[in-house]
Image 1 (cartoon, one colour):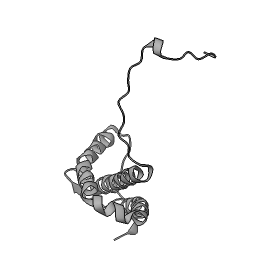
Image 2: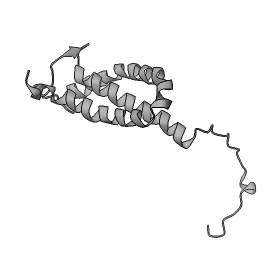
Image 3: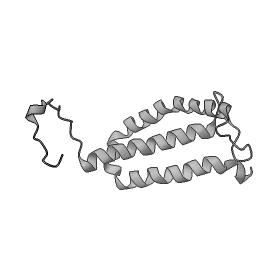
Image 4: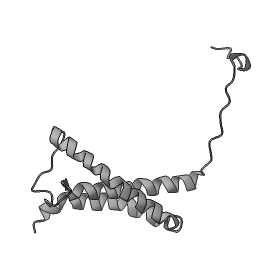
Length: 124
């Protein structure tokens, strides 16, 4: 097998996987509690990779047949599924750790104030 045919999937795995590994390495103890949620989100994202078919038919981009595996699942390139899964895991992992690090606070309801209740700014 020519390494050129693995170019796209290796790019997904190396760069996307590096982001996932960096997040999981630093926050392993916290993220292992949420692995089911992260995997579930990744699985739910896979059907959205079919939107790629619209862009391909429209001509927005294309896959070089010499740079992908040529494996299709439900009419979609395997590389689209790997990209969607890896990126979704990275985003979900980051979002969960961001909420932990910066503290998740529920939004308090805002109260509508009348114009009379607002202080006037002297400059404006």
